[in-house]
Image (cartoon, rainbow, N blue to C red; front, top):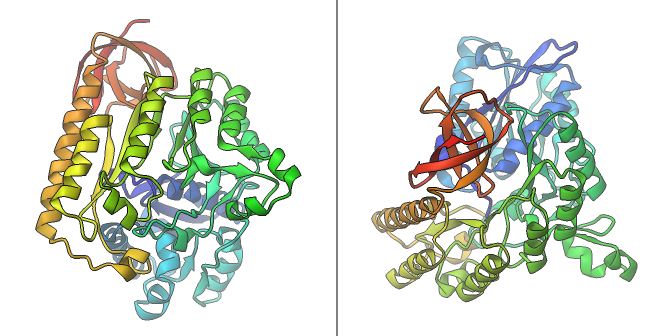
Length: 477
């Protein structure tokens, strides 16, 4: 399952000013996981070469693209409302405007969008962005355009993303695409295809370029980032068929992490999202050996019940998960861990739910992404199981999970009170224009008075107070 961005943050309009001879205006919105936001930067790069510049004004856009998420029904409903808005603007203000759907929802609902509802002009799947120039020609000639073919080798490693809506400080660097895990609740293998990794040299080139441009932090990104393996090309599933020479010289995720950390020792390195079955102890040792790799791991566990984990086709048990976390803390005692949880999966009993609460109590995650189960058409769960948990029960269980996470988050942040932590300033605080906001290496938000600092500065901050999600302090240097 992909890491999902908080719904309050979904729908971010990604915009930038592109220099050069640009006459057509592009408006992009992205929803869902970080991979979608990264993909929108690839799309912007491709369309910049086609003469587009981006705009924040929807009414002046020649082309409107929405990069979509299919992970939950609510995300899809949000996108549908936005498409209705786009079409209203098209009808009332700009009849020549073209509307396109990108990403996971595009692949899943291609015929419905184009033929049944007729609410878009173009549908482009996650592996077809290089075909955008051809598809736009089709649209310009008055024909609907669609390409949702999944690729076995496309990684977009040869495209330099246009950094959209960023602060010039942090950036996403995609290292894998697709997923082979086949969790029964998840649409990603069907909408993004089989897992394949990107050439490490192209990753290093992108990281070095970001450093040269002044970026201070990157996140290595993938649906299942720690299963990265490069053996000269091909799908992850074909690795066992590779030659002994290819296997002997293959680059694993821990080795890639080492390469990146050593290439830019002054740049902070994060990674997401990890999977318990693929996380290995050597990653912990690499993190311990390099001060610039942040002490935080996002490690979804989905449920504390082995019965539910088996139904979800998760390749770990609760005990194996806890053993992995224990070993992580032996090697990385200052590392924080965050989670993904699904409540109300088909067949979940009160005992199963309580197993999840018990696992949360034992780990005490720093933060998490917690959702009610929603049936996704095409997934194994939709074919095998009845969605038999009443909505009221799902809501009540979710409230209990969220309350537990809030308590645990407060416990973890309280450990920082009285201590000093290094913060990378990212922006002005949303709640107080007189404060800076940034994250420390444990991925906790820190706010403190502005004083003489600026975004992009690393600042030592003494923590005086906290909430369940934020540290509050003052600069000490």
